Image (cartoon, rainbow over all chains, first blue to last red):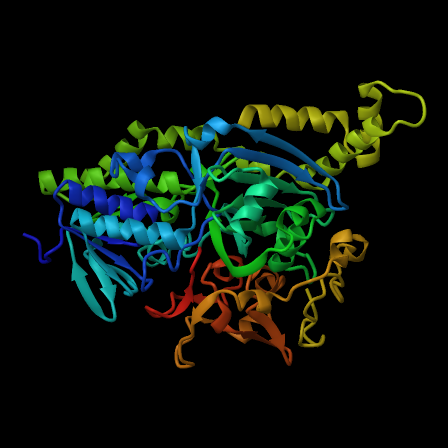
Length: 434
Length: 128
């Protein structure tokens, strides 16, 4: 029946593609995974926290064998004022060292491991091959094109990441020929090398814990950006996520300036001082959520992970890798179903969408569909970091008559240009959307 | 926004300015502008690249279309500083590209043509 030795071709060897391929092999579907990097992970970059336990569905022992950096046992959420102050919530829980909720990871290590697991599961893994397009016949996807040749399969799973060329080439973006700037943020990341002992002493993680910090970057210029800092074994992952439309009309300010300014904030500098830069990179963050998904299935094709837009953000965490795993598994199960019934039309493959519903992924995205409007609220970046700094400065000041908290708040609001109505509105919005 | 007759080279290691940019905020007032800077090209030196021969640029720009661009956001947003005006013409340096795709997204006039580098070429993360 098939013109190919493979029933399914998975394009992309990140968390989504590898998970889909492993699941397919486990279900007895003959699967080819094609990765454009010479070695798994070499083209992949993420902020760096893998949340949850979703890999357990396909790799029950993953926690014992995946090369992770450190479990998150300390979470920081902070507001950094442009002129120096930092207001940081600092949650430590030693229990999280063993009852893990998330791990700092580095993709060059994890994704290489994932492709090894795929091979072990029976997937044919080919690296160093760049798929140039989806091959179509009569509007139906029949395989992939590479160097003018077509490799056929009954179904193709597109897992080529946030900057998905295949969904554009294959016309799987609701008619759009370009990714929409409003639905993507830019992540810029540095890897900073620091001796293991220094990390453990400076961050108080111990040998068996780790820190994950997220920060609102207070800026007067209108650029909306958040910063992150994670501890790895003997490196730090430091970076920013920048709202792209807010970079418009910014004169000569660049995205690489923004990450530099974050690194040089006194609070961050105290944590990273002495560290040596060993890598610099960038990656798009598909944070458009529910409104921004690509087409999820067509005749002979499914889209998973970042390529589809399964990247979740609620302000405290950005989660991409775990949704990549889950969407990959949902797609694989739909393909296994299609193999069983011998039909690879969009109607049959729409089982993927039903799997995404029953998995709960769709509910997660529906529940948070307006969150980006709240998160990219200019007041959050331009006013609130200074407001918090002003409140605390006033409370700490011992000179003059003692004032009630309420008076401090009123004065700080005045000084920071924040109104009660703003706080009420943003508080309500946050409450409703977070 | 910026006049193409302006000096071609955007000065490196300078955050402030906004010369000739009407809507640019007053960045000199920002404490961030006064920080010591590390050139992005020096930072990129830390990443490993396998550079393709000059016969294949995976991203191309049409400088004539760039001349019509109202915002030049590629210059601001490219994390690898691959876009700059040289002698008043937009020039793209693909060798430092980290393949993020930002330029394709922000290029509303349609000058940027984006494809993946050929297999085995381009950025090669050791950490990621």
